[in-house]
Image (cartoon, rainbow over all chains, first blue to last red; front, side, top):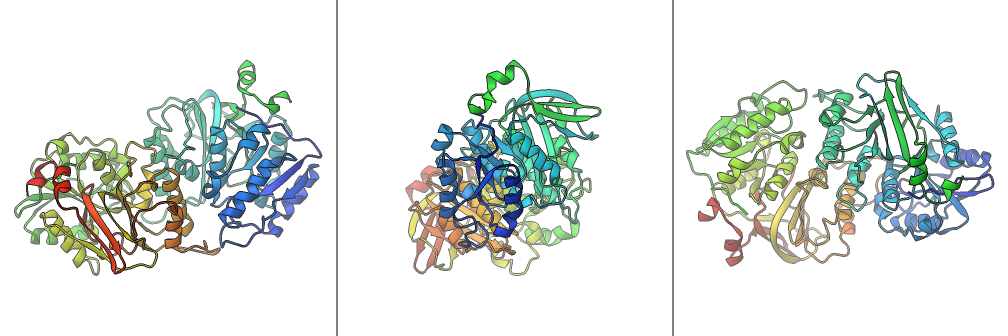
Length: 316
Length: 316
């Protein structure tokens, strides 16, 4: 994997929107926070474009804006402004030549999972973490602290409280994933991830339980849960279950899909659509430890790690 | 394709549930209608099983019931009682050996699209049409009339009114598809359909516009819209568009995904979650004609047709 160079004070970074519309007011807090980290913050030329009801500008505009940030040698990181939907409409038209020549961090989660999966195919690490529109949200501080650490090259360990459905064990492997909807949305496309030997992360928001089950079943039927190194379940936020209730607990629903597998499984991870949504490097080599006191996810150490990373970020 | 034998008066058929729960009262009308067609109607042993909140019994029960009907040589057709969700939870565990030895019609739509796609892989024709729980619905008569004709071996032509977004033309090819959610749900699995040279049908219910767009984009990204013979859009029922409105009409949303393709496209087809939901043979060779007065879908005629069909149904 190619690790982009970590940030330094004085670097220029960009806010861009690949999905849903954002307003200038919604970006205010992010401008302040990123500036307070010593970064020069650029907004893409059409960040507040009104050319589409839902999307942050039409496809052409969002595509051109994002491409410009990929190509701009002075931009050291791109922060995706918010999620929603829209990234897959432009994803296959982006040209990643500049990024491969001069890697930079791309940051986001939720709808941005689609972009992470594309970058994984290109063997470029990216950052799964909170997004500018959420910087003003209550309890965001640990999310931002973890993001800052990751961006500036400090290793960061994610810890999760014990969950009775956890499956104990240790695993080391490249980590990937994010939003469950976007994971299933990549199946059958050129961005479908190879999950063999990987640590898979899933989180979800605002779905009916039966849909959650459908997506988990989809992953299983596509063979994506068969040979994981480990499975991490993040926030399952606002999962709805009207009458008739689906009749299964979320944890049981997950475990039922993988009852013939041996790998460790950790629930309760602080990843997803709630705070804290702690940052991690998508595609990086991580170690997961699930034990009776809780779970821990941290960058893999030792020789294996050195062998795995190439590119500028490995030097720091 | 293997065409099961058409029904005759006196045949035994079965009601089975692969997905959501049904009650005895909900099946009453279907019992009456199918009996009035001269059929002996069997209910699977656990059709009204209460072992799961949402599903018509737990997976094991639904699986065993459906398997029993597949294996029962006296059963000439299986009517899936209703849709919802649940078919994919048992689909990969069903054993179709008996069905390949003694083909029979399997009837349904919506969630049953998953089963149709599996049968297509097995090269067995099936029937996309209304389901028992909807037999009491208002305006169901044409749906039932078409279903009866198809089941008893009478050719049936589906006609659609003109739509301004239609793309004129003629196409002949095997037909497949149904519910858009279930089509995308099959991508990356062993049931992912090959759509090259096929007439693809899509219909949807109760989705947000942005999700509809996401699924269409998924099909496009998976290459499933590239080389169709033709595209048919059925009912788009209760599509929701809250604030901010997505900003695209459904027809434009569809056409945008296939702007670089040449094949005919027909909207307004009486297929899906409204009445009339006219019946057609999934996997069969059909001809589509889209012209300035409307559209027409009918079984292909002539030598091509004879060459395409094998199995008992070809004799009638």
